[in-house]
Amino acid sequence: MPSIPAIKAIKLIKVLEKDGFVFKRSAGSHQIFFHPLKRVVVSTPVHKGKDLGKGITLAILKDAKISTEQFLK
Image 1 (tube, one colour):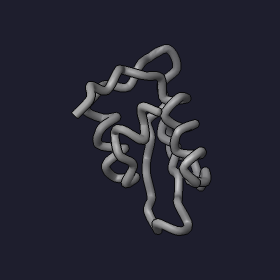
Image 2 (cartoon, helix red, strand yellow):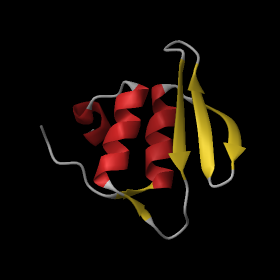
Image 3 (spheres, helix red, strand yellow):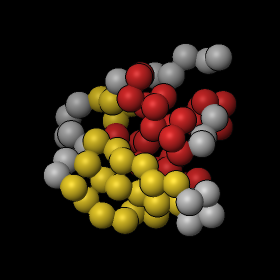
Image 4 (cartoon, helix red, strand yellow):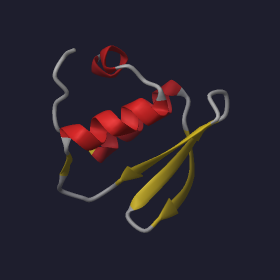
């Protein structure tokens, strides 16, 4: 399995939107996205100036049903 780099939340959000996720609402410092076909809800923490850790990135990708290979493209 390829290594996941630490990335900004904005980049992860772009990956989610490219996969078909739609912004649903915001709750504090988290943005909630919904995929109408997969019927999946994903919460992404957004903290300006901070990167997402590898663990949280992998957990969000797993919840979103996006493979690491698809993410790295």
